[in-house]
Length: 263
Image (cartoon, rainbow, N blue to C red; front, side, top):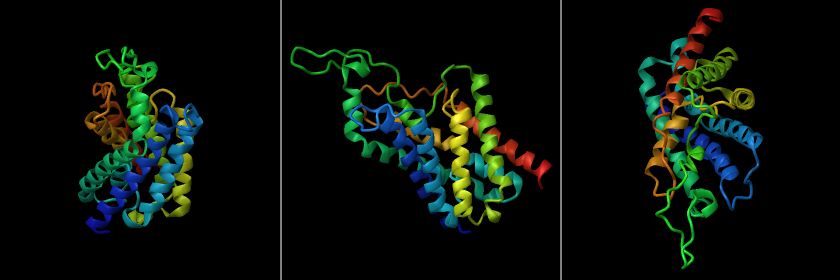
């Protein structure tokens, strides 16, 4: 597998993953979207289909890791060379940022309608009918489209949740023999992995929004911070370490457990 294969496969695959995953979050969240308020089931299945599509596209090119936690787990298990890990991670982060930008482009009108709605951002209309932008907006009214956040903010609990959820994902990938020595997970493997992601979302996603992927959170969070969106609120960088550290630890634990129990 060449460096260009890894770069192209991981960048495109992760971009599609975030485009479809972030897209379902935007569809459910934003006003003037036909899917507004579709709920948690729509989000979990949307992310599952996002994983399926991204993995199917990139599987035969780069092995479709699409997730630093998967890459680290595979490196510990022995299916990926450590020398390729930085390229995987850099390509995944780039792809995640591209995917987040595409979500913004697709929902451009909805973002602006949502973020200038007085009911959403807590602003008042002036006598001329314009929105008073001097009023303080609510914190992060669209951040959840780009990145994850906890329902109860407890750093220890939140990171443990991400560790456990990610370990389930990576261990499921490793034990199903989906990666064929890094040469691609195959169509059936992509489907199984997608269903595992849906299951994690339904069962373990409630506390933190199940990032289970550092670049899935970090790349879009960076884009949220940079985008010129009115009243978008903060990017909650104080929490950003949780969906980075938790999944990386979970992926490493899964790789080690695989070597102990299944190798």
